[in-house]
Image (cartoon, rainbow, N blue to C red; front, side):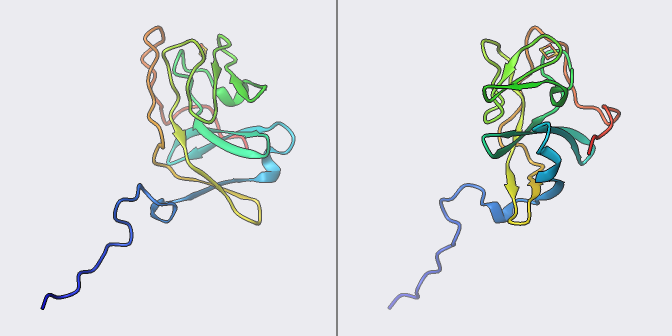
Length: 145
Ligand code: FES
């Protein structure tokens, strides 16, 4: 007779929401007017965008030449960089018609309206071949709350 075997509850799953170390970064009311904000997670600037009632987070430092995407424009669900008007999809971080990609981060919004971000990128950054060697630095623009 064989012993019963235990089945790991997370077997076969990708990283669960419970495994993330969520960081509180803002409140929904902070996005109400401008639909965007810059926050800091572990010293890294992250841009939040409110698109059709959903919050998305990606690197604030543009992969092209390091301008702040949170100072850009939201138009038709896309983020337009203030530097050279590259368009980014805040859901994927992909740049339209470019080879650069912003890292994206998982977001949770609590029933009370608190916005939480998982500091581990959900999708990686890909620096643009035509841009500067973009790096996120600790002395980036101040956090606007
Ligand atoms: S710095 Fe963002 S498009 Fe050039």
